[in-house]
Length: 281
Image (cartoon, rainbow, N blue to C red; front, side, top):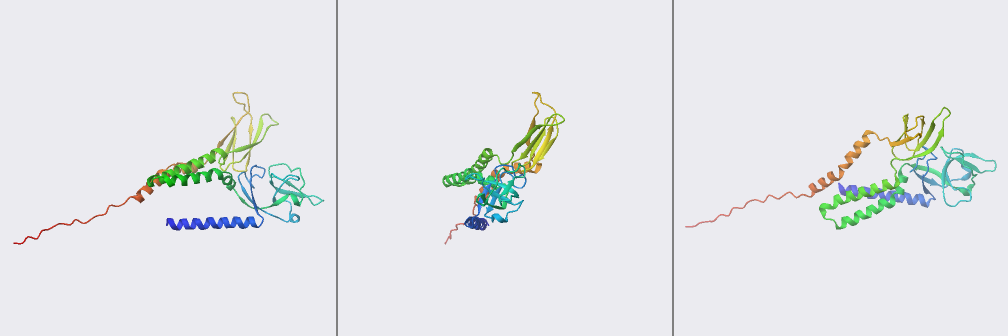
């Protein structure tokens, strides 16, 4: 069963690599969303699959990737806002103001064909994760058989923990505004930029839960002990997530036990041979 699963995984991996190669040969490219300007359409950490597009076919609402006029580096991915009389187009993000530039055909990289949420975080964390894989393979080469599973699990856990701590893909949020309100106090507006939901809570006031790309606003009216208007951000993880995390803590011990039991040899039962002597008179 393990051999069949390995072969299936190998076939799927080669198939995916072939698909990526064909995409690239056909002029396609990939972009990773780093800012929350597209809201729920493409939250931070989304991997965009971009293909060249006929400039004259672009219409308002089309999701495109482009470089600002005169720029050769940073790319942006926004929706087409309008087409100007001279044929150029303007763009705008879901949460941002209209972009100040007018784009021509030379500025457009392509149109967004696919959006893979969360995969951009894997691409960003790839150096740490790949280093963890190579370190695991190196240690397994010299580890005793009984230590192979524990070593693999510990190194994998360390690599994933390092990637999560460094890039913070799970829980995060970005402030959009903290402005005085007409009736007193202030309105705090944030957008979720992590994979898991976040709870935005006003000091002594209401709260709102934000998922990836969602905007949340709370009114802060009560000042804290220092006389400041304050909000707090905390993960809003459901109970089943905690149950899953607790269960994952037992994975190393369970895997080690199963591996150890599978290697145990059942002692052979050898028949007892009774020697007999033939006595002759």
